[in-house]
Length: 184
Image (cartoon, rainbow, N blue to C red; front, side, top):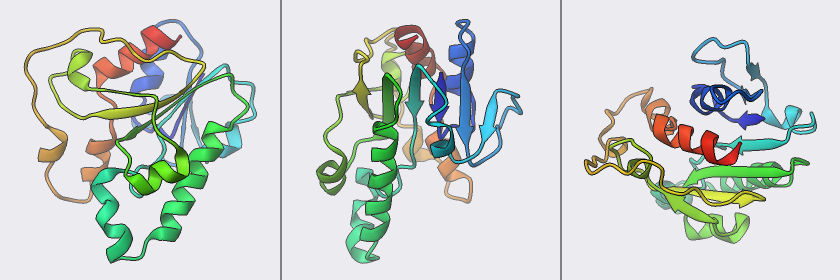
C-alpha cells in the first residue's frame, strides 16, 4: 500500500499497525526516519504494483483558503500544474485510490471534479475541526469511528512561521486509524 505525499508517517504507520505492507513516499525525508519511506517524487512509484494508494497532494493552489491569490498574484499556471498532478494520481494504475485534500475552490472543482465525501477529525477521535474532502476510487466513504464532543479549530490557530504548513498538513491520528481500519 502506498501513502503518497506523506512525510509524517502517520497514515503509513496506522496501516502497518494493522499488519499491512505500507510505504510512504514524499520529496521530504520521513519525519520518523522509517525505513518504509521512499524519498522521491511519488509519480516514480505509481507503477510498482500497489493494491491501494492514499494520496495527500499539495493543496496550496487547490483549496478554498488560497483561492483569492489566484487572481491577485496570477497563479493560474500553478493551479493547472496542481490539477495535473492530482489527475496523475487519480489515473494511476492502482485498483483502490483515495485522494485527500481540504475543500477545493470552484476553479479546482472545474479541473479535478467534485469530491466523493467529507469528514472531520472529531468524527474519528481527534477533538479538532478540519473539514477534509476525499475523492475515492473503489473504496467506500469513511464511517465515523469514534465521535468526540470537544471540538477546536486547531489548524486555524497555528502560529505563523516557516513550519506552519507542516502542522497544517498533518493527518490527525484518529483519521489515520480510521483510514487504516476501513480501507485495508
